[in-house]
Structures are given as structure tokens and as C-alpha cells.
Length: 170
Image 1: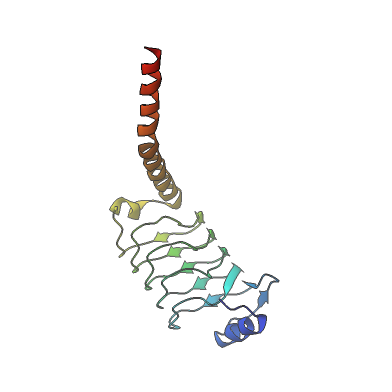
Image 2: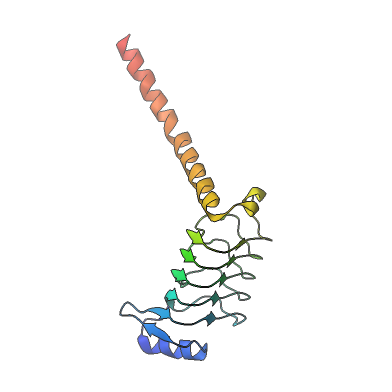
């Protein structure tokens, strides 16, 4: 990530991104579309905040979504990269979310809200039922897995403690 405002401005100009504001914390809000498709990017060197249009970082070599905006008013496309996780994906997308053709094994860290379609075909997802889920169902699915893992981890200890209490009462 760039640490200086002039570096950020230079990169945004090079990428032909217009109508942007660099905030005090060096996040970048854009009142326009952000088209970074086919720029041979391995990472995003700036942290985007809110984008008032679409955000397209597809067809690059990204291994992480670090730097992606928190909110996108249009569609968000990150297909055809080398992503293994959706960590750092936008939380709110007012259009489609496209993460097809990556190396995702999980949809954990999916956006909280997608007001369009959710595309995740041709990944390495273990559970094919996820392909037909909407975002709320995906979050419920992963919440259930985490709850199940926690219960599996903690129940043996609780059962052991209950056995000790019963023995003490005898």
C-alpha cells in the first residue's frame, strides 16, 4: 500500500481513475467507475473506500482483495484472478458480485449485501450447494459451521465437568 498522497494520486492518474477524493486516512473514495480490468495487477496498492459506480479488478493476478472498497454502488467484478479467499471483499454491493474463475475453496467473507446476482462458478468450492445460495444463506451456512465447530470443541469439556459434578454428589 502506498503511504503518501502523491504516490496515490500518481497511481490513480496512471490507472485513469477520475473524480476521486483522497481522505486523511489515505483511503480513496471515487465518484465514478473504477476499471482496473487487465492491468496485470498482483495487488491493489491503494485502499479504496466507497465507489459511486462499478469496481472491476477482473482478469489480473490478484491473490488478495486487500485494498478493495468497502461499498460499491454498481457491480463488483474480481473474476479470473488467483484469489483463494474473499477476505477484504466489499461489504455492500448495489449490483452483481462476480468472483468466478478463481481458486476459492470457501465463500466465507462474502459481502453482507449484494443487490444483484452472486456469480461464483468455476472455483474449488467443496460444497456445490453454495452455488445456488443467496448471500444471506451463505452467511447462515458459515455461521452454522462455526457454531458446530465451537460446540464440537467445547461440549466434551462441558460433559466432563458434568460427570465430575455427578461423581461429587455420589
